[in-house]
Image (cartoon, rainbow, N blue to C red; front, side, top):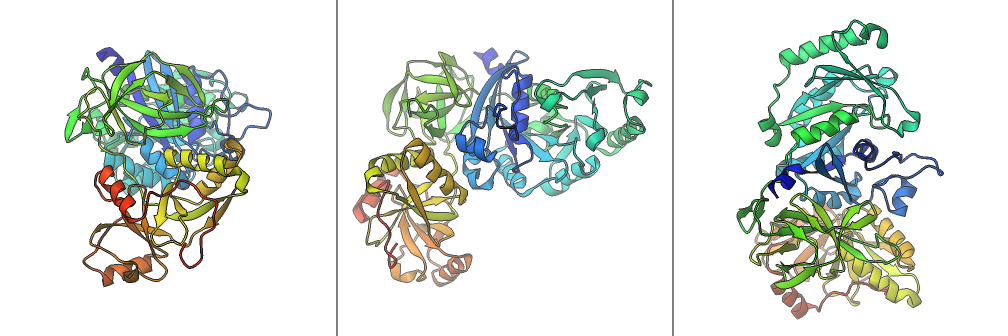
Length: 553
């Protein structure tokens, strides 16, 4: 088992939208032999679509909406690649994925530098201690100066940057890279549409023939910049990489497959394998024979023929075997893991065994929730997956009463996926759940999926609130909050306050200093919370067709 653990590399790709994350994912799969022909998010209608963007709405909009698991072999290693959404409205899915990886590849647009979402995702990785490799993409377009981009990494993100390779030419004159580890020059040749591996010639930087192979001055400029890096740049340290203090930097063009091979080799050589995981205040070593893993994602309707539900499980320790029995530690029940699959986009195949670092899909386990632990030892509970307060709220109504059953089923399954959260307004005249999401685009996706996957028309009615804070300490009555605010219960029965603005929130804080509020749900057992929910207002329903009253939503 130890050899299998050493073979694993489990990593995510993160970026701001349009930095080239999905294109890079496709090219890594191409070089890893998992694809014979790379797709493109900008492909014409008659060209193939990307393997990672498998939802129809993703193909229509050309953006990643849901994270995707892709496993492939490269250089006798098993790589688990998790492609994540770049749009901020789907960042909660990305945050969950980052709990399941051992490293991340951060993609930066060479023409734009570090953007807002990149900075946020970097901070999430830093807090979780996830080592980061950086790929500066789109060198084939007019970029910013490479030295300035390195300086921005250090000044904005506060991390030392060590370029593993260096670009030869910029913009239309970008021809290849110099590998500082091997001292070799890689000159690439473009392929039609970047659909195939780019043919490459390897030379020595001191080779006088480079002057004829590269546009005038490029080789001399590269030598000068490399001398400057050797004299003034940071020294490479693998320990600093694993500690998150230094990021190896790679330059390239994903769309043309320039420099992708260098990055893929570095993932094998520099990224860490599966490491220990925290559970119940102790460390679970991946070499521990006893099996353990946790659910970090749930996805419904990946197979439109069966309309099933897949729970994605990151294996933390021990060997997984199909049909094995383990404890579902949240409920204490023993479950048989019989329908296990290896996932590749929307495609799947039965998996008989898997090892720490692998991500498997379990079908037919309707009782699993995001964050649940599966283990041979019933006393193990992996540290929880972080939850985030929604910033947008809405009611989604069924279009016609005849579709209510389908509508209700769809809402229930989408809530299980964590696409959105359900809340119940205290004192409401109608028992209508309020739905919350990180961004408004999530509601459009929910409406689309209800119609396309469940055949239920839906109507969105936006709510006015923008901030939700949970009551951590103190008792609050409806008369004590601003007139525009509301008291709410989440699915665990924990109380929260909805505010229309930050001003209203601060006004309440100043007037109620004894009440402690939290931006995340308060801790506490689910059973206690659910009992409290039942005692106060009854268990919130999962779907509705009614419209909220204006006096009390």
